[in-house]
Picture (cartoon, rainbow, N blue to C red):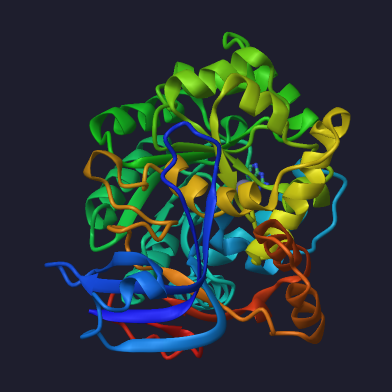
Length: 446
Ligand code: GUN
Ligand code: ZN
């Protein structure tokens, strides 16, 4: 066992009630290893209340610091680190001019390996402890990323991109081969240590019906793997999808028609939806990866939070690097606040800071089905039993942060200061629940 004395931020269990952040100014977090060697939260609460009971446990005292759950990035592209900040008229020219040429380079296992190392270093430096990540259409890109995530003992999910039409020839698969490779990668990586596999059709326009059907068959055969794709991001993309799949009610319905909507399926963007689409998300248990920096950068539109909450489907926050402009969850939460203003205009304020933070931690974990329900692992929170992936925040990291956070009169004011002013400098340390010394400064195990 080990304990940390610091300020603590976590979330009340979410049983349909409004999201509630919990905060202990002088708290104690106690972690203990389970039989498999995974450190889990054993107890959390006020130092006053717990210190007697855990007097025998070694305590690391972190005065002035805040311990909070590791962030969960619900949608990110590991091969697009170099694509960040590539301006284009919109999604489709951006894919063609910047993204596809860069993804071609992942044909090389060496290139994939060095990109994977940089990518995971960058996530951890920014306090992201779990991500659902696209690789490229090359199996070696998945192998490189999974091997690196396994070395760091991360809870991490990725998958090989499926494309068999409408992309450059170096990036399109033979349909049959793509499905054989996907199944081999599921067997190789899914459930290994803390890793999970996601069946990854890029988006409907770059797959034939045969490929989508095959992906749906694999999803049925492996009910606990994840599914990830893109939907309803951009008007030109939607028109294209409608033209290619005229029999489906909507772009989103294409995925449902091929058996690709269920719990553990995560669809990036979900901007241009009608209520029937929203109801389909809710009834299937699929979740949206809201990607506000990407949507603002590519001019795609604004996720409709009011519509999502009215109909009641799940969502969480995502960087969507490299359409997205930052690995920092603080930048993503701030962009989500701006986007929320759009939908909440008539009601005055936008999303609360507690809700924004939840969307990037416990909410994203719930969207992934990693909230401890039905025996699944729990991440994104610090309730007892959760895997102990967490960040140590230093609110004095910059002069302005120190000045502003010292003025906070409430939890909302404190969280808002960090969302608006924070970046990687606010993350003093990232702690991963299993024993591994990464050698990366600021990353450790409990
Ligand atoms: N739609 C299909 N592929 C992509 C991608 O790589 N990024 C984004 N933002 N949208 C997509
Ligand atoms: Zn994306």
